[in-house]
Length: 295
Image (cartoon, rainbow, N blue to C red; front, side):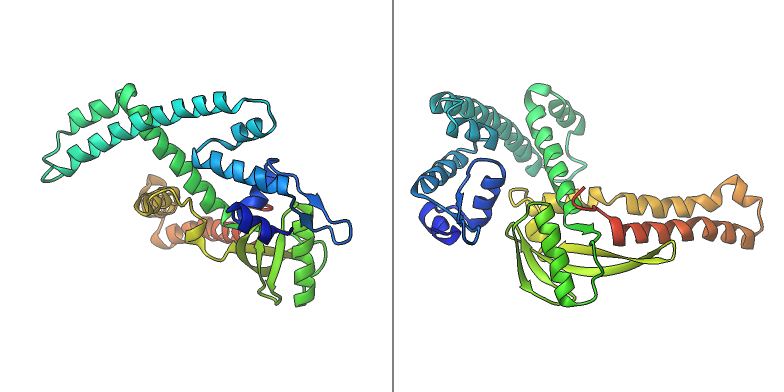
């Protein structure tokens, strides 16, 4: 049976099936004639077991150990129960703090010192702030991976050459690709995620070099779904704080004593001379080489 049949019978999405295969939890046979995956009843049973264990929020490495017989299901379930109980205590502490803060008439009315003291108590706060830190890392990683570039082996001047470049990249990186729109602005999916692509050119020692930039078609859907939207927005803001910091530096730079000793036109000339090449180089690097091959 094909992946659509496997999805219907197991209740696991095609995207997750491919993901579990990449993680080594599933190894379907290949059709010798067309190299398509063929899922057996044993694969469907394995997918149902994976689905059930994931509903317990069991980590994938532990699920793999259970499927391979390296860890008994009873021991794995007991370990997961301990994790969930610890997380429940952390959530209870966070809920209690939220309840207290929600009852305050204003920010000024809060006893900040007492609140901070309880937050600093490792017994109550470690899990709460650990989750915020982990969520930030996940959001920052998603922001980083929403866009990636790669250098094709051949020139890309036609839609067919663009398609060939994308297929070659997917084969090199062992990714499942489906071209949904062939053009100079193609649309495609990688491991079930929708992307669009553009071609950019730059000159290296006088020779034109093409770079392919791929971006997710639905950026908001690419962010971790289990992180609340308000928290995602805050963490995206924190992730891009370097931009206002750079603007602040530009504002403060002319106030340095070195600049104050120069004539106004000389200060502007020096400032432009410093910032213009930096801006051009930064934009060029982002356009052509940002997150090259998801690195």
